[in-house]
Length: 484
Image 1: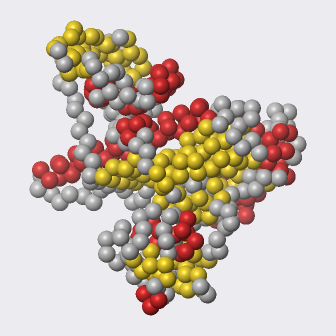
Image 2: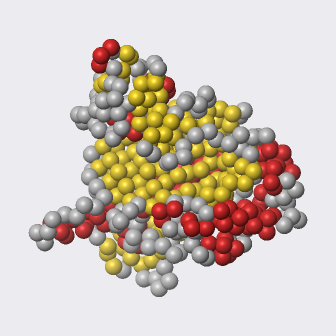
Image 3: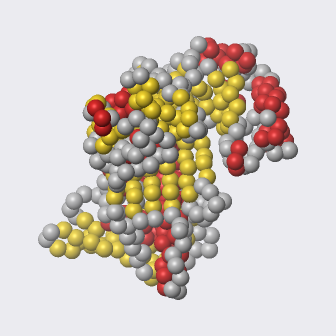
């Protein structure tokens, strides 16, 4: 056996925030939607993940675990890239070269809509790890909160006897033809190759089909999104789904904590910027906008004055120029939507189509989110087993869970949730560990010797056998078997 030197994962946080936003922001029938947030800013890393946590229906547990597992993957990927960037900069510094302007960025947020008992949630993400530009992604999940079915395939929405695939493909092709110059010459062939296996979600009375960047058109064209009215799918959709969709309403353009803001404030577009009413949005975010005569509107220790492109607040570092001055229309002051994110530092995101506003009402240091903010996807087997041993010593159940294969996650999640993601007990505790590699041609297997202690002295060591395998088609490793 070969002894492996323990790998220590050190992560010093300059600023880390774990916040629950508007804890019970929305309740529709028995469905409750809690908005959660993981945020971490340190050095070359900027991480913000805002996601929903559902309750009130049986399928909520599976939906929540799917979304949280997706967060693990995204966070693990971006922190792994941050580690790579740190190594590159250290090498540049050692060689006496100027450090490159590299950083790791991840932002993720959501919206959702209900069509009767049909719930669709969409996760919007963007990341950057170097290069000419970042990447954007969408992931969606659709469930029936009454029957608790999760629609995992596009075909599960339709009557199996219908010719839905041909109808849908023809509709997509016609929409492509309307803007031929926007698409690759082989876009229709790419659609046909999907064979009806589309990414989708339901937005009120519309079925939405979307494709990733570069699938159908160049990067500058963004992600292709095709919306089809339910009335065009009569006789194709399952009757229960059609009945619920036909009278439902799609999301409005201004959204609060993931759903349409009612009533919708009046907005307008100027120089490709969305201008929004200062007083209404500030109040929504918990600020008091007070008229201060010649100084304009006072918000959070700063002033917003008509036609003066200089903004500030107690949260901004001096004056901020947004490129557009505020504009008074009657007694309503309009500001660029970036005022709320850049000056007030609030979670207000504009993607060109929708303005998504998230409001923090209380602070809740969720154990799972707090631990996952540290997770780095292990790119070697040795790193994976060392991360597991260290997480066991520190009683970080969420990190252990993040390292597991899908099968182990399913087996161990309920038990870890019951312990609020804190493993072991305060006494005895793990005082140290040693890791030995066991020869195995097909898999990486390790013997982890845990040293135990109490306040009265040392206890006998224990041995855990950990099997680690590479994730198929990825560069990362996962734990597939644990024997204690």
